[in-house]
Image (tube, rainbow, N blue to C red; front, side):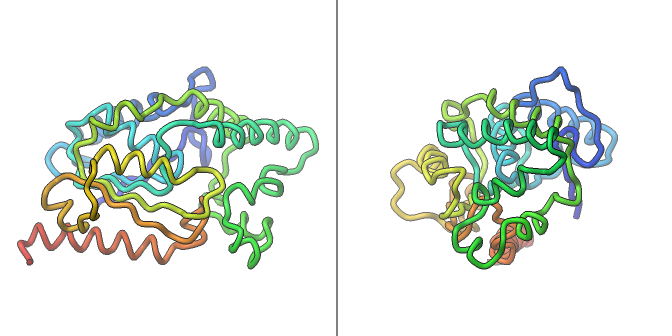
Length: 256
């Protein structure tokens, strides 16, 4: 099994181009170029072996953009955790608030972002059990931080994202969406739009195995959590991924 983890530019000490607009088309294009390069060297096979592409939050938007811009990409499945198709007024309000907080953090020497905006990422039920500072310290990625200027560039890039709603018809692979039903950042209409574009008026959702077998379709799984799904409901995410991988393996082996 091969796993390729792609970090955001500037995260965990990686290099980034401060002059670039780090929106979905830019990051998707760079990631596709990376995959082609790794495939040519035989380091990570993508042209001969179908693979699963997983994106979380902003990464889900980038993953959707990658496939929409390169439909020939040999995907087994597209897995999207709390995806959004475009930056609507709700999400834009949060992003602009974050950008302002980065400047305040730089002036007071305190990471204001994590202290003020935990309610933006976490469900109300989770915050009743865990205080915001503790919750955000437990978040995946905290151990691989990005500098304030990098966070600001990523947020500014997201405000310049290409609207993907008009490109959904180009998605030609099975899609599994895991959606937090108490997500302060992203409304349910984003997953609904993807599902509607791929499944039409289909009343009943197909199973994961059926989608993989037919090479198309969309499944939306609602999970009782906020935006930080891997923090609040990691076991349910792992269960869904295990079901997906087991179904894919059984199909490869011809198990019925």
